Length: 522
Ligand code: G6Q
Image (cartoon, rainbow, N blue to C red):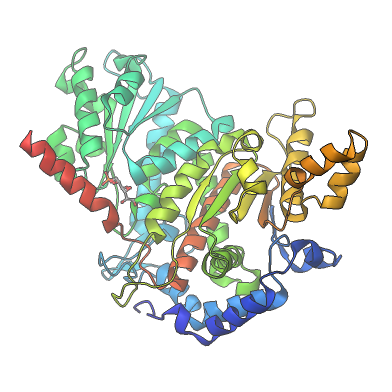
């Protein structure tokens, strides 16, 4: 089945949403939250995950109309089309099956008439056995020493996902140190290799196409550096590759048995669940890697089966569309309250902006409504001392996701209590602000009336700034898998609603072509 081609702005529910917006645009989150049952009606508990979306400028009617819109554009059929392997990436003629990579069900999934599940299982077994050998020290380098360092060489989807997950799961890591080289800037690779010992380093070259300029340049530089201490016969002990391009991998000198497959039905930015995640499995062990996949699968099942009004990725996607298309908010912030997730905003920037940064619809027509949101963010509490000023008192409306964890990984002193107090305080401050009267009362004790009047306007917080609380029990490989899958499905849902193709990325091509032309002239 092809995806439906429905212009969302021409639907009945969109028209109703427009009227609903006109009538309710001045609605106050504070007034909505006066209802003591508000949280109950505007939150979803899903095992270890609690999502509170009560601090939004929405009523039950808003959700109902948005759900109606999702139905009207055929979201349920589109979800089924994705999960069952239809060619929904029509501009590239491919299925989109990152969900199959984490599926433990017996349901076969056919691509070109063949079930892909056996290939996935074989690859997972290969990842497990290779990771075990390297972690246990049985895998030896060219001088007989065990591996101490892993270097992932890749860029974009072949870098951001593994890098983010390895950083996020640092608490679970083993003795191996994992590094990431991505930029074609020679200073990046130089900084990484300067402290490495070629005898004990394993290089994982990750490139679906094995033609990407940055990755091949870095891989060649590293190979030359390695060959200063070793011979070409030592390459199999130190270089492995993840790719679909077996010929190019062979030409590079990598042993066939050291190649992990990639498939064209997995998009780069959704590929950390494939062998692209090899460096994750090496860093935290295969069992933890499997748990990451299991957490994602739990979210997949929820997304596929839950009714829209209780479906976490769908609800978050719809609320974001509400701000993007009706309130005309241009950006969204992602704010994790854990230092471990410091790379999540970068990762999501690619996943979200490369997928939904499109201006032509599925009929080939130029779009005259807003699509992909701009996403940015950083970790709490650091960002409270930085950009949050603008979010609280600036002129722009910036809906924000606050990602938190009930339990810390290191339970040290009262750090976590303080962290979480800030987590909740920020959302309250954004939603409820501080009135003139409150500021006046506060200033009354500290100065004369003239000074109070002068300062008062600057100290008022209008509030009414929306946020979602995404709260897990604890940061584990399992909950991280769930979180990433949540955003993947939010992206998909929005792509369907906006009637765009989320899985191509022609926008990144032109710059590459021009750089090549410039290089050839030099
Ligand atoms: C992701 C994009 C892009 C891609 C990189 C690396 O969805 O397609 O970021 O992952 O350009 O490509 P290779 O893996 O082919 O080197």
